[in-house]
Length: 249
Ligand SMILES: *Cc1c(COP(=O)(O)O)cnc(C)c1O
Image (cartoon, rainbow, N blue to C red; front, top):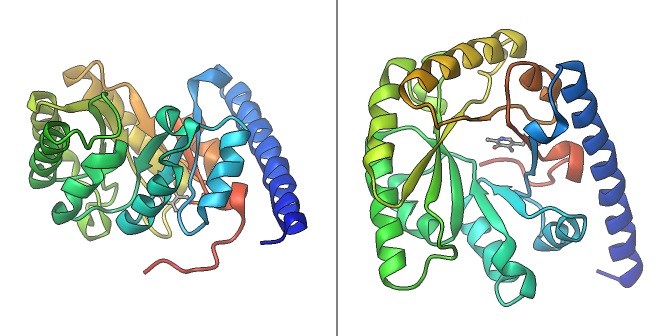
């Protein structure tokens, strides 16, 4: 990339960041919530590491990724930089159990945990990575249980009745910290109804797990609705970085 293309991209992203920070602040105010109550998590999947570096210079320290190999490449790109220690990588996409070891090496958080085998795999992965000095952070791995709002667990997410058992499994596992819940509205579903339901499920979940206060909900298209229904983390890709040129597999 030429110097001028780099500069153009940096100012384009800076402008989008400014707009989305404002948008989130407005959404918080409209919902009667403090702007500090909701984190803006940039989703860098399908975008080059250079975009993550731009976001870093704009103050972001957390980044969301959804494909294991692509994420590992970006993590490696940051390694060796002074900035590396402060960066927290979030795995937000569907995760196969056989990738748990790899993810446990670099992830600060996983938003897409939906079954007990994956929980066991991540706990083992964190332990192994720690033994070998390979885990990028001293902190426990933050786990969000992904909820399926329509019971179609093919697209990821656990059915609501499973959440208590999964929460207990995370709470008991060494190396994992139960952060809260996450969901993506089902295809074609009304986000308003979906996030209202998710909020109810979270309130219920908090009765069993009072410290699981995080709710990862909302994306570029539905941030306001999610904030109105208690989101503490909106995962935003398109609105910050533009249309992804590679389509999802
Ligand atoms: C890609 C992705 C996002 C970001 O979606 P945008 O519509 O681009 O903001 C959020 N959450 C998950 C789980 C994703 O895979």
